[in-house]
Length: 75
Image (cartoon, rainbow, N blue to C red; front, top):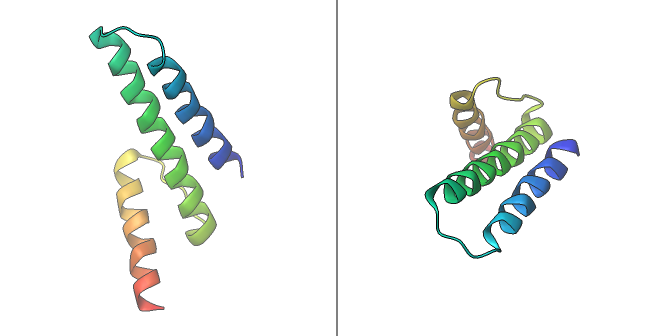
């Protein structure tokens, strides 16, 4: 699934950025953004797999993953 592969690449990118020493704020801002993108893509993979839907906006992602949780509890 494309979304899973992209999530893995975002996370790997964050790990590689983290590896060299350096403590400037900009570096950690980039690492945080990479991790967030990884989470977003992983969430897309879950909602596409189980709900056949993808969030178009970040705030929709919370609703969709909650919907998946509700379906899981009612099963």
